[in-house]
Length: 395
Image (cartoon, rainbow, N blue to C red; front, side, top):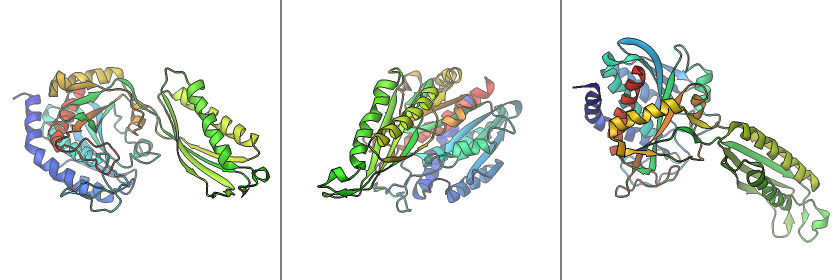
C-alpha cells in the first residue's frame, strides 16, 4: 500500500470520530479570544495522539508539532476555532447550546478536520521528510485577527516555517469538489467609523441648523466617487455603509449622525491611497457645510494572496487525491480572511472545501442562522490536507 492509499484508508477509518468531534465543537461555540473550552478540547485530542504542543499562544491558540523520520523543511497547517454572535435556527441534535453563539462559518469543521489530519500524519510520520506545525488559531472573525497576534508571538519562527496551508468550507461548492485560485483571492477589509457633528433644531426651521443627516446623505454619494472615478477599473473595490444612526424625529433635526462602513479591495497600494481619499472627502464635505467630522478608519485584514508556484503544485496534489474533474477554479471573493496575514509572511495556499448539498439542506450561506455542512466532506478534508502536507515536505 502506497502513502496515498494509506492516507485515504485512514481518513475513512477516522471519519466517525471526526464527525463526533465536529458536533461537539458545534454544540459548544465560543467567540473570538474566548475559545477556552475549544482550546482545552484540542489539547486533550493532541494528548491522546501523543502529539506535543504549545498552548496559550494569542491567549487560546494551540500549536502542535509532528516531526518526520527524516529531516527537512517546516510547513504549517492552520485551522481557526472561533464562532460568531448568531442565534442558530437549525433543528439538529448538535444545535448550539450557547445562546447567541453559533459556528456559522464552519470553524468547528476546520478544527475537527485538522485534528483528523494530525492523526493521519502522526501515523505516517515515518514517511514524512520534515516537520509540520499544526496551528489551531483563535479569533479569525474579529479584528485584529488571531493570525496577526500569533505571528507577532512567533508562530512562524523557532523553527522557521517555509509554507502554510488552510482550508475553508464552502456551501456554494458541491460536496466532493475543491476550489482553488492562484494569486490574489480574497479582499482586504477595513472598517470605517464616522461621526458628523452638526447643530440640531426644529425640522420646520432648517435654516437655523446644520443638518448632519443631509450632510451624511451628500457625503455617502461623494464617497462613491472613490470607487467609480478614483479606482483603477481593473482593481475591484467596494465601499459600503451599512449603519446610519440619526436620532431625530419627523420634526427634529438631530445634532449628530453616526455612520459605519467597510472598504475592500485587492491591491495594497490602492488600499492606502483610498484611505487618503476617504479622509480628504469626509473632512472637505462635512466642513464645507459647517459641521465637524470624527473619522476612524480601522485597518483590517490584508489581501489574501495564494503563492502562484505553491498553489499550482497544490492544485495538482488535490487532483491526485480527488480527481481532476473535482477541482474548480475560484473567482475573486470580496470577503476577507485573516489567513491573509500568513500569506504576507511566507508562501501560502488557501483553498475551499465543498460542503453544499441541497438534499441535506447545507446550501445556506456562511454567517447565516441556517448554515450547516454536509459532513461527508470530512471524509475528504482530513486526508486531503495530510496528502498536501506530505507532498509539500517532499517538494
